[in-house]
Each structure stands twice: as structure tokens, then as C-alpha cells.
Image (spheres, rainbow, N blue to C red):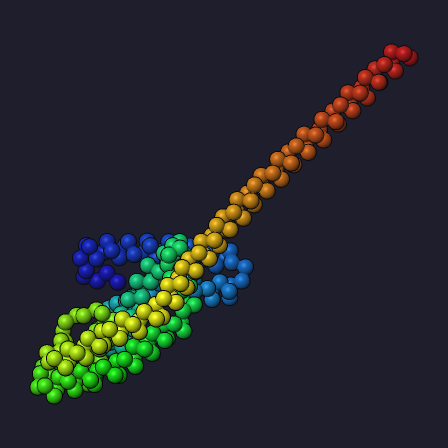
Length: 272
């Protein structure tokens, strides 16, 4: 795995190994304590945990297998072919390590709200993409036609290449890599920018309200969970106190009865 990398690479590998080992230990403990293993594995956050942990072990196994093939005489060619076949998949799996960041969603109310909003607003996001696609199909040929008719098509060489310009303009990003030079092209650009602002404003309003409502619901849910946990602790403490009080009360009368019996016995002996 380490190969001929530098000391900095080795230090990063050691740090990643420690982090993955801790994440794996935590995941195993939570899976053991889970009542339903199927429901535990179907949870989105647990799926993210699995996707974040598995690439490390898969890449480690593949690197160990390739090193063994290279160490064997005549096996280097087979190992190289094997690595060429799985190289793309391995790089993709290593890129999935960025999912470590998504583990923060387990402890972050904002990330949980974002995920819940995306899940609830799938229809709004679909409408937004539909509006953008329709507007792109409208303004891309117009700007290409305007630039080609005026003889100023230096950047707009084709209609498909104009789609990139339409996306950048309608989302008001404006990279500036493709700019209309003619006056008709600039008029089309102004129309696309204004229409993009209007089209994006319609679904964004609904998405914002959904985000606000989801944030309020999750915050109230966390407060209720904290309150229930506090009440459970209070109830357990009260039960323990009641048990101790009952034990002391039971021992008190029993000792008093024993003393009374002993006094009566002594009095009877004396009278006899």
C-alpha cells in the first residue's frame, strides 16, 4: 500500500488507518446493539457509513494482491493487467472517501435538515430542472443564430456548445468563457438571464419554506427526545430513592417489634 511514497504519504496513511479503524469499531458496536439488523442496514446514515468505510478495505486488499502478484516471478504482467482493469473502479472507490464528511450529518442539525428538505422537495427540484431544460432549448439556438447571422460566432461554434452558455447565464454564474459579441446576441443573453432569475425563483420559494419547516420539526424532535431522556433519568432516580426508603422503613418497625418482645419476655421472667 505504501510503496515508494514519501514520509508525508505514510503519515497520512497511518492517520487514515486509525480513523477508519475507529469508524469501523463504532459501526460494529452500533450494529450489535441494533434490535433489527435489516432496519439498521437500510438507514441512510448507516449506508453512508458503509460506503465511506468499505473503499479503504477494498483498496487495501487490491494493493496487497497486486504487490503479491508483482513479487512472483512472471506475475508482474498479470498484476499489471489486473490493475488496469480495476484501476478506474479503485479510483472511484477512493474518491468515495469524501463521504467521511457526511458522517457529520449524524451530529449536525443543519445537515439533517438539508437531507430532509431534498427528500421532501424532489418534485420542486424536478420542476426546476424542467424549467431550465426548456429555457436552454429555447435560448441556445437563438444565441447561436444571432451570433452566426451577425458574423461574430467566435465562441458559439454550434448549438450544443451554446447549451453550456445557456446554463451559466440562466443560473447567473457568468464564467465569461462564452460571451455574445453582437447586439442581437446580447439581447438574447439579457432575456435568458431575466428568465432564469424568474424561473428559479418560483420553486426556490417552496424549497425555502420546506427547509424552514423541516428545521423546526427536527429541532422540536430533538427537544422532545432530550426531555424524555431527562424524565427517564428522574424516574429512575425516584424509583431508587423509593426502594431505599422502603428498605429503611421495613427495618425500622421490625427492630421496634423485636425490642418490645424482648421487654415483655424480661417482665414475664421477673414476675415468675
